[in-house]
Image (cartoon, rainbow, N blue to C red; front, side):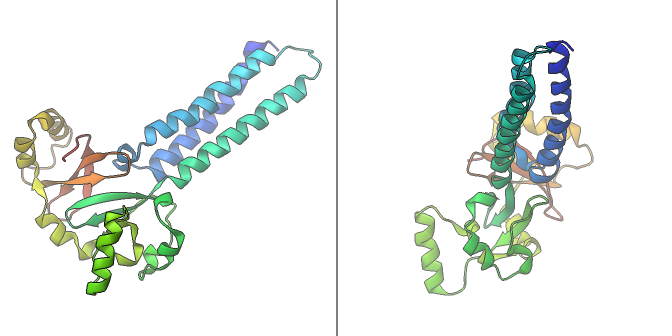
Amino acid sequence: MSRWKAAGIHLSANAVIGALALALIFLVWYPQPYSQAAGAGTLALLLLGVDLVLGPLLTLVVYRAGKKGLRFDLTLIVLMQLGAFAYGMHVVAVARPAFVVAAVDRFVLVAANELNAADVTKATDPAFNHLPWTGPVVVGARLPDEARLRMAMVFSGLAGKDLEKFPQYYVPYADVVGALLERATPLDEFARKHPTATPLVDAWRRSHPQYADGSVLTLPLSSRNRSLTALVERGSGTILDALEFDPW
């Protein structure tokens, strides 16, 4: 077998594994539109750079039919690649979006590794006292009623840990969606306020003709990486999509 054929076989096997990894990342852990806000594209690119390129390239370099120690070399390459791939998948997994928190007048995408395990277990709703593995869960968040706790939240926010980082204050999205939508901006008004976003708005409308004028609202969608503009259905509050435009 030539070294090119060996590298090709290695590449084919990696392509299958890479396709499965991409499906898990973009269809389960980082579904649209949250993959944009979470920077999943960069993470996936780094992961596949190791999986698809590094292993087959090393095979191409070291492979020579009849070479003494070839089996050891190939085994070492596979083990190194598996180790790098496992580490990469671990990084992607712990950074996955866990909750999309509707907090006052915006959505905040909270990654799994942004939440303290002890805080998660304090959630009063059983649906929110663990980190989901099947995609981010849309929830609401409410400030505590007690003045002392509200003041503590103010100081916590000043220190960088805002309401969305406290699962004990999570509530079902249906409990806050009405108040949230009252603070939303209609898509037409958003386009008038942000002329540079007009091409994005027009392109989205062309690809989604089923949504009549006035049926879509906008709200900020923030993460630790960036801010986007979430598009929300007026009646239900369902997050339809996100524009790659910083509304701030």
